[in-house]
Length: 387
Image (cartoon, rainbow, N blue to C red; front, side, top):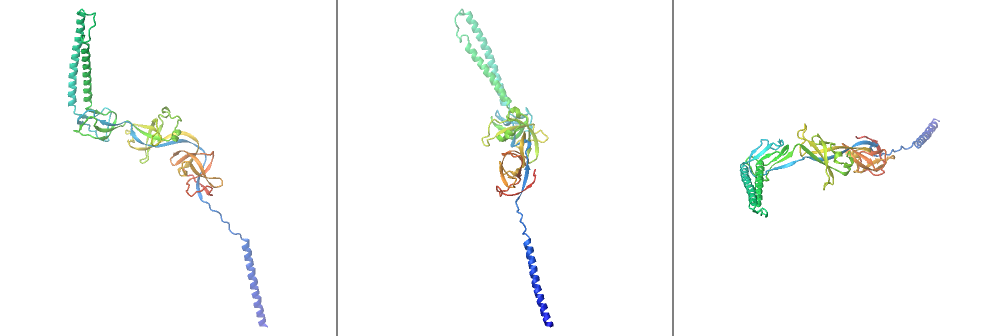
C-alpha cells in the first residue's frame, strides 16, 4: 500500500511540473506579444547655421597697393667734368631740403667759357654801337648829297651791316647765358625735399653729360594707386565718382605684417583701365610720410580701407559660408539643404555682406559647407553665430 502511494505522489508531482512549465511558457509568450519592438530614431547630419535677417551697414571698400613717391628722379649731370665735392649727407637713406647743395663738378672750364663769352659780348656790343653810328652817318650823308629825292639802296644806308651787327650781339648774349647756365650746372642742387635712394658717384669720379649721379625720391608726398573693380566703385560714397566728390575722403592704410596704420586722403582717380587687370585705380596720398611719428616708407605694400555708402537689405555671413562668389547653402523649413543664389556686396574682417537674389527676409545659412552636401539632403540645423 505504501508503494502505491509513493508512485501516485510521483505521478502527481510530474504532472504538476508539466502543467506549471506550460503555464510559465504561456505567460512569457503573452508578455512578449504585448511588448512592442523599440523604434529607431533617424540620425541626420548636424550642420551649423546662422539665422540671418536684413540689416543696414556702411560699405567698406578694400584694396591693396604699393606706396611710391609722387616724384622719382634720376639725378643726372648736365655738364661734364670731375666731381670735386659731395655733401657729407650724400649717402643712401639720407634726406635733403629743396635747394640744398648735393655735389659740385670742377667749374674752371665753365668759368673760362663764361669769361670768353662775356668778352665776345663786349666786342659784339662795341661793334653794334659802331655800326649804329655808321648807319646814322650814312643816312645823313645821303640827305646832304642832293639825292634825297631818290631812293637810296639799303647797302648805301648800311642797313644789312646793322642787321648783322645786331644778330652778332644777340648771339653773343645767348652765349653768355649758355655759359652762365653751364657754370650753374656744376653745382647740383636738390630739386625738392629728397631722399637718396641710390648713389653712383664718389669724389674724383669723372662724369659726362647725362651720367646718373643718384636716384632721388620726393619725401613731401607719397601716393598709393588702388585698383578697384566696377562693383567697388559703386560702393564709394558718391555714385558719380568725380574728383570734387571724392577729394579729401579718408583712407586707412595698414601694413598687415607690422600692424602699422596710416591715414591717407583721396587725391584723384585714373581715367583709364589697366590693360591687365581691367580695373580703374583710385590714388590716395600721404603728406610728409617719413616725418610722421610712425614713418611710412616707399615700397611698403599696404591694405587700404575706404568707407563707402550705407547699404540696406544686407545679410552678414561668415566668409566660410560662401560656396563660391554667388552661392550659399540654405536649410529650408523642412530641414532640407537648398542652393541659395546671393550677390556679394563687400567683405570686412572675417565677414561678408551679401544680398539674396530672391526677396527673402530671413533664412538659415550653413556656416561651413562641405563638399558632400547634396540638394534636398535632410539635416539637423544647429544655430551657431560665428561673428
